[in-house]
Length: 283
Ligand code: SAM
Image 1 (cartoon, rainbow, N blue to C red):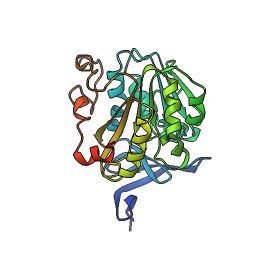
Image 2: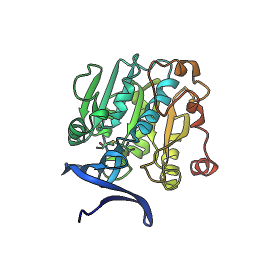
Image 3: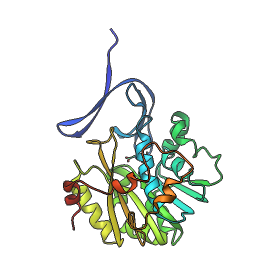
Image 4: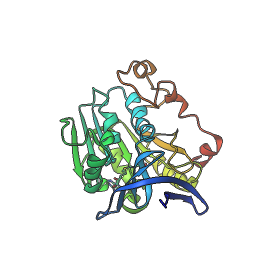
């Protein structure tokens, strides 16, 4: 009798997601976390860190479109971009579609994530395999790296795990202060900001911390089926540009590359939030 194997992630004590898996492609522990890459029938290959869903082949396009393109189409001319975390490579892959970006830096704390993404998730890690001269890889704690860089980046994308383990510091005010000083005068920071449905408390403190540092702070949403509740969010924190007021729709509409989730109309729509999500972060 062949036993069905199901991976389950609990999103609260009493609810979660479950998916039928066919095999484990890698399972190992780095200095920082447990890394598993499994084959699932519904979502293709999936990366787990400490048992939590990070990315799946089937729905990663949504997250990577939405952590990258709203900022890169709001900023008039982003040339240098920093990604903190993002060891699967999907965020760098989307940044590279913007030909005017001259240099993207990835600062990922765990080299095992990069290594296994290149090996087993090539559709995501295609631009972090060392062959793209516009990409620089750093294996380092983003908190340490950001201290060494002032007034250097047009955009900083915080593509981290949830505020547990090595990413705890990436949700605190002093980190946002460091990000602010590492950005140029018209810089923009994006950070994944959890689920408005399950994580109201995390959002409340995260957005309070962001507002203590940045003059413009907005939340935008995306539908990500494998994340808790499927209703996900990102923080848009900016020194001068507003994501709707300063958005050049024609520039986004005339982009030379296809995006399966982001588009020039959805850009504005993503910032229209349900009332309860607005209330999570109300001042
Ligand atoms: N899209 C996923 C999400 O929203 O949860 C994130 C994917 S990416 C794999 C998250 C990465 O953040 C992991 O590879 C982890 O090692 C990295 N990370 C966690 N804390 C970090 C830190 N302090 N500095 C740099 N990278 C960090």
